[in-house]
Image 1: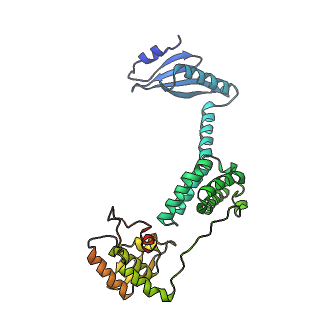
Image 2 (image 1 turned 90 degrees about the horizontal axis):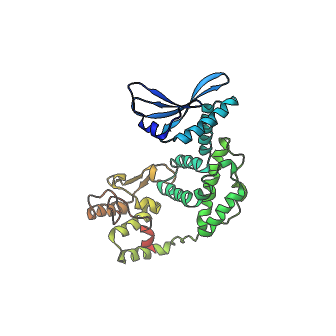
Length: 318
C-alpha cells in the first residue's frame, strides 16, 4: 500500500524507530522523538546502501518519490548518489571560496594588521560600494582586464582620486589568487597607466618670515582655545594632523616632556616617540587644567570620550 500525506502526518512515534513503506524502495523512518526521514534502499555495484533523501515535511511525498527515482537511475549506472551529493556540495563550497569577494575578505583581514583603522575603513567602503557589486560573485579565474577596466572607468568618473586605491586592492587580491593557483595572471597590470591620478594641490609651507605673523593671527583669532592648542601642537611636533587630533593623555608624559604615539595610530605601524618642547609642555599643562578628567586631548563635541573629527585642524587653519 502506497503512502499518503494524511497517513504520514498521522504516524505517531513509538518507543523504537519504525518504517512506513511507500514502494520502489522508498520508505519513511519514524523516530521516537517524532521526526520523520525519507530513505531509499539501493544497490550500487552489488552493494546494498540506504540513501538519505531528507526530512518530512521539508521534503514532501511527491518530492521524495522524484528524488528516489533519480537516485535509482544513478545507482543503475554504478554511481552512489550519496557520494555524488557530497562531491557536489564540496564543489559548490570550493567555488564559493574562490570568488573575488571570498579572497577579498581574506586579503583585507591580512591588511588590517598593516593599515591604520581609517585606511581600513576607506578600503572597505571602496570594496563594498564600487568593487564587490561588479566582481564580488565572480570566480577569480574568470576575471579579465576588460571586466576590471569597466569597474575602474566607472569609479574614475565618480571619484577619480579613488581609482589608484581600487587598482591596488584588485591587484592585491588577484595576487593572492595567483598564489593559490586560482588565477594565472593579474588583469590589473596592463591597466596601470590607463587612468591618470588627479594632481593634488598641496598647501605651500610657511616661509620663515611668515611664522611669526601666523602665530600672531592664531592668538588673535576667535577659535576655541583647545583648537588653537591643537594647531600649535601640530606645529611644534611636526606630527600628522590625525595623530595630533587622536592624542590621548595616557600617551603624554609632561614631567619628562615626551609624547609616545602607539604603533596602532601610526601610518607605518611603528611606535613613535616625540620630544615635546618647553612651550608644548606648558601649553598642555594649561589644556589639562582647562579640560580636566578627559581621556583625549581634543574631544569630540558629541562624545567627549572620542577624539574630534578628521577635519578639526584643517577647518581651523583655512
